Image (tube, rainbow, N blue to C red):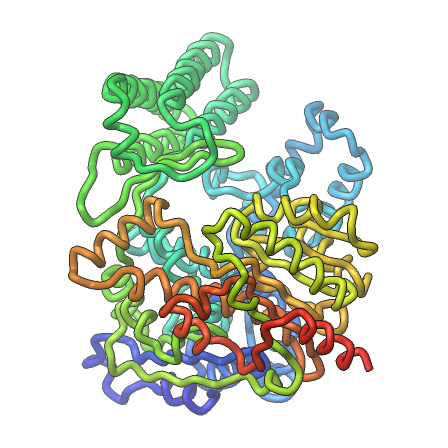
Length: 623
């Protein structure tokens, strides 16, 4: 793999004739050592290289594990910098303002404030990752982090000591930049419109965990208008006015801002109340009041922007708020009035807010236009890039030429000798049967008893996870942990430490969970992870494939489910000494024709189909 990467990074002698990047796609399963396999040739190339990862955790691993190794043995003077989104860094100005104001008393845990105060005085990076004691979604961090919307730029009193400014200077001098996909595509989307980039110029990009790229690019090549963004703007304007405006202009500004907040709330009443994603054209069609409320919302945004513009003429510190108001109006227009056939328009109700969005139906053309033609080399790598042993799905979705160089490297771990794959017998109900959920719960209980805990159960829905927890909680003698009960890092630490606990999870736990050793000896997946076809983006992509006379189920839905399943199954074997059971509680692997495609893509684990075989496996494994 390292040799193949090195060849791809070789610059042609005449770069003037290069019209697109040299590209390589490498599927490197767990245990290959793919991180070093791309980092070493990247460093030796001498080029400015961006390594883009799927998670912050992998960013930290590369910076703290692989980079020191390379410095020790290969390049002592290597300059490498980990660059995260600016919300991950402290804003010194906001922190000092917050810590000196009475509102900080609202935070009851005074020891947190004391810890934060001490950290602000001593931190050299301002990186939130240093605050290991701070919960993931702490409102305390929201008060002091750096955001584009609230940045005062060169006029900030703390500009000379700004952590973001210092980070950018270090990034400009570094040869290796380690970012995540969200930051990379945020930068790429800004560059599309000729605005100032987030990252310095680079020659090569290496995408690790590249199977995420389509989903991440979709969000950044699209547009979003969030009702929470309006609420946040109004709150910030009131706070700024309290500190920087005289009584009369402050009263007038607050009145206009609150009128916008009220109109936004009225507009929000037209949108679905239940959590989920919905088709925006269908919502518009069902609401006779839509045009009137939308027009009123544009009017309220315009009134506030005019007021902020008049204030900004006398005080430039208000220009940021005016620009935010203008951006909100532009984004609202992009998702509600400037509709086109290349995008899908949808609405999402979440925990805190509701938002309207426009997403590209395909990102392949954006990749070709804005990425492939702007760098010298691109490396795509992941443990899961192929379906049925082929790169066809990836090539289609990423817009890659058929002659793109590829490489597949199977895991060196002994799946055949150290694992089994359990699939229920033919009489087990299919997922659409009324008896299916109960059958999954009962058989999962038997498997967990045979494995003596030590099990990770992955679900395709929150309801299935919660029902399983209720079923197991009073039955098992082991601790039952569930996603959402505590931060992910805490749950994983408890799961690994206890050695007999059971962890139930959805979504993000299908990937990035690395628990080597005895604590994770069994992975149970409730069913094949097909995405909900009614999701507006998925539905639009299915329709587009149908319009092109394709077969969306086999060309799109099955490959995506295969990649997700492979990621979930990959949680079991994390080292050469690991062993255990994989269980997929879905007999469609045998009862449906497409099941063969899944089986062909799965690890080389011997298949068993009865509970006595499961029990016998764990008896031998414990001897």
